Image (tube, rainbow, N blue to C red; front, side, top):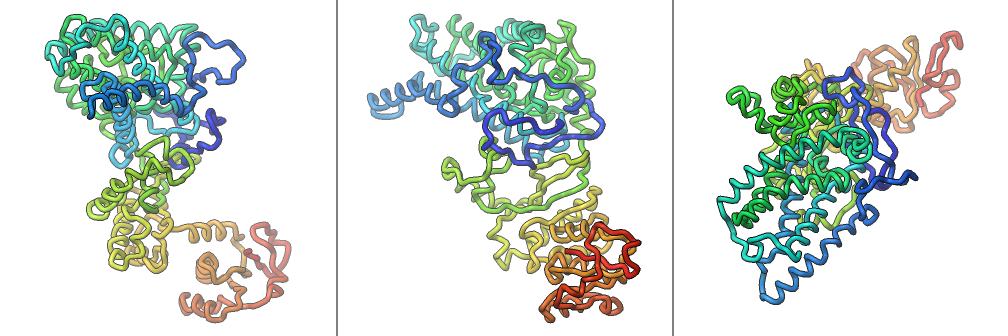
Length: 580
């Protein structure tokens, strides 16, 4: 996506770099976000006069916008007190329940699409979500607030719809009527209105912000201007209104229609192919009755095709069907968009609370700096149960990814919490999980796997030497922070160096450097006051190379050395490098 953009909302909402700062620098794929320039909406502080219905009236309220639903809560509380129990027939209660259920529908798809251990191979756009998009879509649920308020106005209006006074639980006739009205009215109205939004000047005034999201997410489905939300409200409400006007409305129809509508919307924006291409090959007409995430992503990229709501039939009739839709859908479902990482960072869960900050739980939590949110306390027992299930049944899984200089880096997690590393009986199981992850990375063709945190504990596996010694033919390089740093330092030492003066010589980093250099027959002058620690390191070197390790106790021994990395062979005849 290029360099990270300025924060739109607040500087304190710092998204996790591994979860949200993914970007590509390789040749663009059909869905690479670098392929086309993305339009940007007008800044919030723009001095230009905004068109009507292009900004939300409660935009400045932040989280306090939910107080707009306070009157509904008050109505439910009144009815609860009057009836002495839950007012199950309350229209106000059902409006609030619908608001929650619809939000959970989008949350379900958000969680699923970000469970990379399930969806990695079928992601439509391989890029990750950057800081700007997280902030941009922060108030994605504005349309839910608006539609709940509109519903409250209709329920309490002077001319309520027939059937609202004596609301039935279910009437099967209503489902058929709603389906006919959706196909006959909602789909074509949305199609032509959507095409109009892509024309000038409406696109720049109302629709550019929606298309400025590089990678569609289920929450992107709700992100837009009030005008777009009203268009969605119309297309959603027409089938319901028609069913009620014909005397076939019911409470069940409201739930089924709205939740199905939201389910299909969030599925299309999920960026994960969920319908097998074999289904469309077996039933070709079906491809004109239901869209796919690939179908919608093509619209978001190219902006001149695939305008339909859910049914590509209307793009076919309108001449705007993208001919690449089904072939690309097949390729993506088959995993041809997948790629082997070059670097894997193998972590573990820190504790129960931090386990709820992973990218596939709540974006409002995982995209801010870590802290113990009180709102998560009720879910602590649930997270504990999942932790125990992982201990019993899970294996190492993919958590997040990012691109750096065109190279794919992934973060894998061992399904263990920090406290489990201090249980003696758990040692063998943890090492087995790490070993399986290393072997899996080796089979995949990963170049480097780095052990993080307690996975590299000396008492656990000798900093990873247990696995390297057990599998000497590994192609993947197993490292951790110290050995990787040592490799960087060694790479900076001039190739014609004959002697090295090493400070911090008995640290993990110094030990790794000393043992490597002595095998190259480079004399290593090790500064340390501890003969015991020096001798311990010296004994680790093969007998024929131990003579190249020399202990000194004063800095004066390095007076003829040059500081690494700057070095010129002509500076001295006795080549020596000082490693600080």
